[in-house]
Every structure is written in C-alpha cells, then in structure tokens.
Length: 136
Image (tube, rainbow, N blue to C red):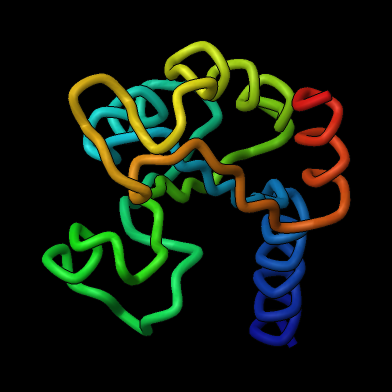
C-alpha cells in the first residue's frame, strides 16, 4: 500500500511541476547579419534559446551560398524562444528597432542584399498586432 501511495505522490509532484513550467513562445526577426543580432538576444533575461537561419524564401533548406545570390528570397533571421513572464514581445520589439536601421532598404551597415532586410515573422495574431502597432 505504501508503494502505491508513493507512486501516486510522485506522479502528482511531476504533474504539479509540469503545470508550473512557463509557457514559452517564439519570435523571429531579421535585421541584418544574424551572427551579430544573435549575440544581442542571447544576453536578454527571459530569452532561453537563440538560433540563426533563413526565412521567407522560396527554396527549402537553402545553403549560405544560395541565399547570398539574392535569388532565393530568404532573409537572415534570428529565431528565439522566450519566457513572456520574464520579457514581453513588446520589449523584444524595442530591442529589434533599436539595434538596426529599418529605414535602409536591403542593407545593414556594410552588408548589402535582400537577405539583410528588416523583417518580423510573427508566430501568432498577438505578435502581428504588436508589430503592426510599432510599424505604424
């Protein structure tokens, strides 16, 4: 009987711990060279994971060489996972707008090409509304 009680108790603790885990969200921004911007977002409290890659193009799994031709339509992006209880999407947008110049078309500093464009790939309607608010 004690073994059954211990097993049930262990299951309840596991369920309780899972229920207390924060609901993490994703955000994806393009703002020039992804290596530079990846480093900025890695340092933010509440950001738990950061990945560099390509988005918005017409070729599945493009290589760096393909993207740099400008023919795939991809942008260099940073996708990151964040805890909205620690950092809000609006706060992430503030960083996005401050660390690059969105007014220069297809360019950030010395990096020139459509792959360096300023872009926000939203993951839900709430992110779209927040991005639209800042844009306007």
